[in-house]
Picture 1 (cartoon, rainbow, N blue to C red):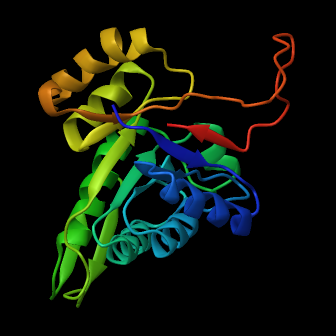
Picture 2 (picture 1 turned 30 degrees about the horizontal axis):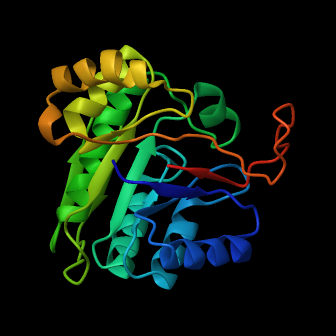
Length: 233
């Protein structure tokens, strides 16, 4: 097990200070979140630019908040900035978030996630020449798509909670992102078998999950922190 940090500070300048301090402390990985007031990809690019050794990842980037081409281009750019240290963590988000925040329909979450991850991989792997993808949900067509100077591989982790989504993560992703509320028992007894059913090898399974923490000098156990700016991973 390795320990990383999900940096959640609203001010990106403050987040970069934490990133630098965490790297000096020897942190294994640094993770960003995506929300209505935060871009996981913009912050991941900044984290990659000011660090040298930790893995930089997103936890998670909504798959349908951006067009497939825009997401693939941003991910490839970050991978280039990070020198191969970038991990793209993706998730479907909820139907309500997709509809109200991103203006997109999410009618068949698991199949849509499977297809979108396949398309992202194909876009990143493409080198030069025409590109065409005709899926059930996604269509991309370009007479010429030249990206010979950008990375052609990327580690993708997929998030999931329900049976179908966790199984899909096992089918199409390189690893799994557990929900913040996921217990050790859930990861062991529920998620791992579903991921194996999807095709991921358990002996080399990569998964990330979050543990919420608070730190304070007071010893009074009745005290609880009112604000969490960062979460350990």
